[in-house]
Amino acid sequence: MAQSFLLIFLALSPLLSVSAYNTSAGCAIIRPPRDGGIRYRGLTQEQIRSVQVLPVDYEIEYICRGSRVIVGPKVRKCLPNGTWTDLSQRSHCLLMCPRVWTSLENGRVSSWPLGPPVEGTVLYYSCLPGFILMGRNTSQCNKMGKWDTPKPVCHYDRHYKGKTWSFFYSHDLFCSKISKWIRSV
Ligand SMILES: *[C@@H]1O[C@H](CO)[C@@H](O)[C@H](O)[C@H]1NC(C)=O
Ligand SMILES: *[C@@H]1O[C@H](CO)[C@@H](O)[C@H](O)[C@H]1NC(C)=O
Ligand SMILES: *[C@@H]1O[C@H](CO)[C@@H](O)[C@H](O)[C@H]1NC(C)=O
Image (tube, rainbow, N blue to C red; front, side, top):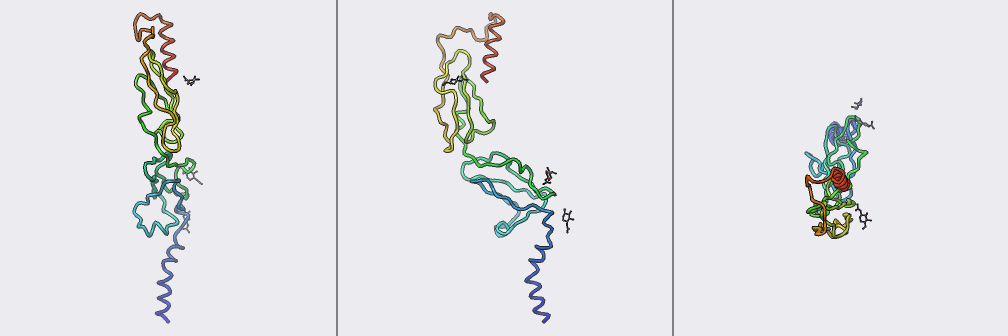
């Protein structure tokens, strides 16, 4: 009788320790972003499969498949109130377009939004004074991780009359050139 009681107790003890665990002092697991996974530090494969709640201060890290990069929070930490940090900001695993497009010889490139050139990023091209843009002035990074237009080039304008950075400029001309240049940045 005593023996069978002990046996039952041993069989139940893992359950007891789980139910005794104060789940309000931890965070429920969350799903990784699409095309991504979660790195759980210090847990075995078996624990990762069965875990439901992680302790306060525990940090999870998102990892993305293949060449995708994480945009948004990469690490989330379990807070004492049972939520994870930055849950209002979503994390995405996105493809990145070639960085070669993000700079332009004798010109300028601005990016929207700022950050790595991922799916959806739009680049705006302009050339420095004395150069003419050959090609499209914008390019967008598509879902396949490719820019939707060839990279433009800035050709030297043989007919350009302005004397770049000359001290003989009249004040107005100097300002208008500068402001035009700054606006296009
Ligand atoms: C569980 O943890 C919360 C937050 O730390 C605490 O307020 C609560 O009293 C705990 N409950 C038990 C049964 O220990
Ligand atoms: C949990 O705590 C954090 C920081 O202390 C706070 O920003 C967040 O709003 C809280 N969330 C809830 C659901 O209480
Ligand atoms: C970009 O090119 C389009 C025509 O292809 C033109 O309408 C637009 O004004 C240009 N934008 C800038 C900032 O130069």
